[in-house]
Length: 191
Image (cartoon, rainbow, N blue to C red):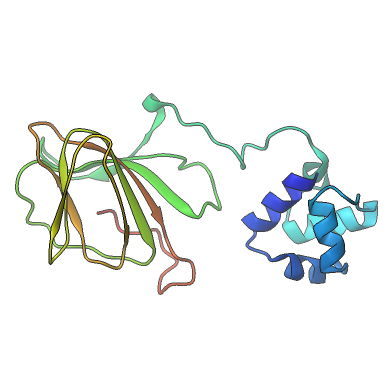
């Protein structure tokens, strides 16, 4: 129960103190329950389940919850749109069925050739990992050339855009962390 409780608390974006207050126990006691030092009473377990919006059985189950782990095989990625034509960007969603996640992972196939699209920016942070091909990540003041195995991590508030530089579209793993405390809680605009 210990690790499950911690994950569910964090998934609900609750501090130890906030959850303890909702349940009517001390922060110290709740910390001991999360570390497996103490076992909660049935009454406390019911209150924890109610505060975490889950069935009490989930707190005690040894099975891995589908909401906590998701596997997406290469052929199961979710098409997320993109432009029409052979040189347009293509996006494939990863873990799209997992709710409550703080990161937005997807595979991007940036367009080939010159890009006239406007620079985009959004709240949060972004990570690119080039799986195959070559690309350039463009910022208004400079560009970063990327090849297979290269990665870049940057503040998504910086205006940016990406394009493939080889004959075939690059394949780039992109992970966006959309800052929930920033100016927007929406899904970020794809680069």
